[in-house]
Image (cartoon, rainbow, N blue to C red):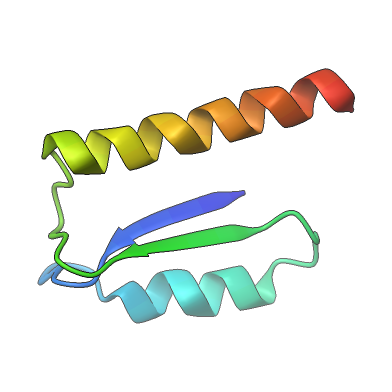
Length: 64
């Protein structure tokens, strides 16, 4: 599970992602906080972070 959350999100607090990640029992939980990111995460740098997470997940699926 990967959580990617902008810390400047005014709609959903990034604390929600942190609290949810804590409740997941899997050891494969990644939380990425984007300090200057907002709710949309549509900037090129945001999309790169999302793409990198997808690549990480796909790489793990080859191993499992």
